[in-house]
Amino acid sequence: MVRENGSNNNNNHKKKQQQKRNKAGDFFMATLVMWGLSVGFEIVSIHKKELLPVLYGCLFFQFSNWVLRFWVSREPLFVNTSVSLLHSSFASASVVFILFNQWSEKRSIQIFDHEELVRNTWPWAYTALCISCGYFAYDQWDMLKYELYSGWFPSILAHHLILLLCFTLALYRNVTINYLILTLICELHSVFLHVRKVRRMAGIRSAESTIVKAEWFLNWLTFFFARLLPHALILIKLVIDAPKFDKGVELPLALFGMIGMNLLNIGLGIDILGAYKREKNPPQNHHSD
Image (cartoon, rainbow, N blue to C red; front, side, top):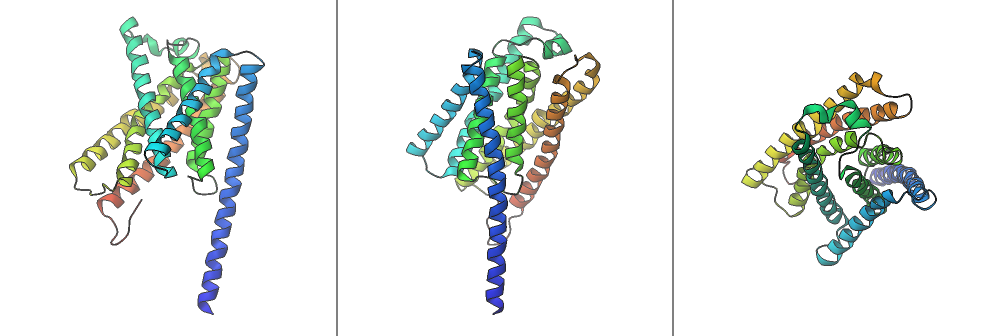
């Protein structure tokens, strides 16, 4: 009788958890559909052809998904992580290329002046931002489709929603494009997050392995210098330059986005630290995350 009650309680708990997942999925799916309709309206009705790379980005990463499923694995998490690794590699390389190109041309710290970051757009920056925007839409769809998330308000889905909101509005108005390109330097750290997932799914888990040690070193290095520090500096610069912004949505949107990103970075850092400790001291007879 006790066992039956325990089993019923466990089943009820699972049902409640699934209901919360379903509600979260419904909310984020609704926002994704609204985003898609908005972008489609801008392209078709207002003839903003410069937004087409958003669509190309969605299609490219979805095509990469299909190729991996056909040739490599049908495991949704492995395929999703592999495509995410592809995007992180593309985005970080694009940011480095764009910044190197600007520095080579101007050789001045003025490339980070307020007017340069808000009103001007560096060569290739708009297209790169469009493609990344398309990726985040694809990834949101893929995670919702295969339920690759957990919790009543999944941080990864919230992260993508914030990025889609900030990126898309900036693309519509063609402002703060360079600011957003700078935020994408964090994708250099994401490379090693995705590499860790792929490595663990491949069965390489020994904390004493040279590969694992090198990966963790690069993971922590890029977390601090390509994610935590740059995003904190961008937020500080936004606050300092606040009086220079025109009245409108640019400053509130930028502050909202960067405050959200910095809070998510803190949570991510805590998660990474927990994963590092578990990997260094794995529980007996139990596979940790």
